[in-house]
Length: 71
Image (cartoon, rainbow, N blue to C red; front, side, top):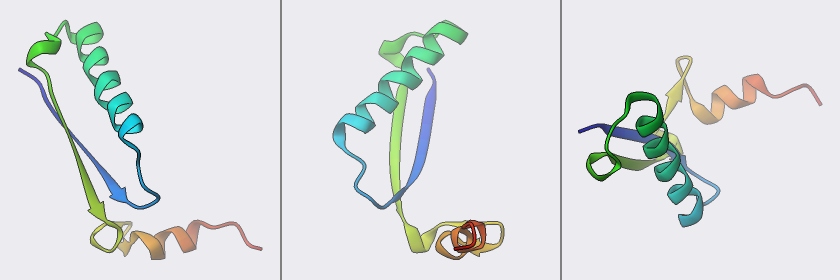
């Protein structure tokens, strides 16, 4: 019984259709690669506020600024 947790930042408004595509795609991948039963595959999507997410030791907004190409 696979359980997959997808965490994304809550910004830009991920649509219900995009979430459905993630759920379907992950379920299909587990079926195709590991022969897991889709009926017992659980996929949960958590949307995390941007200020609660960090990468590279920085809040993600600050990290993105360091990665932006010079203007």
